[in-house]
Image (cartoon, rainbow, N blue to C red; front, top):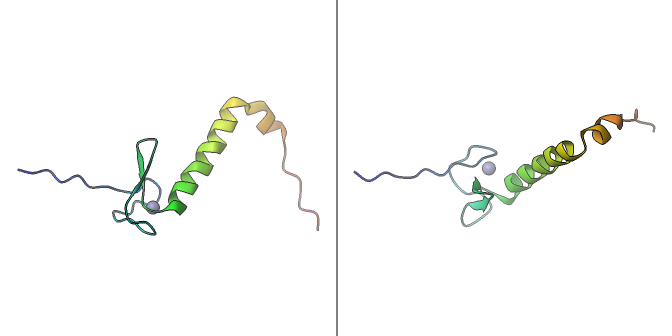
Length: 67
Ligand SMILES: [Zn+2]
């Protein structure tokens, strides 16, 4: 019995590469397109920044939009 490894994108769950010839691998995670990889990177950056400086992130209250 041969077991077929199914590759699934970490972000959108797609099982086929889109926008690339092959899946992209980043930190042992798989992404179907540069866009999905960017999404993960952005989320990872935010998570890391919050971990490193949670107070700095929290103390920065978002300003109300001024037009
Ligand atoms: Zn994807």
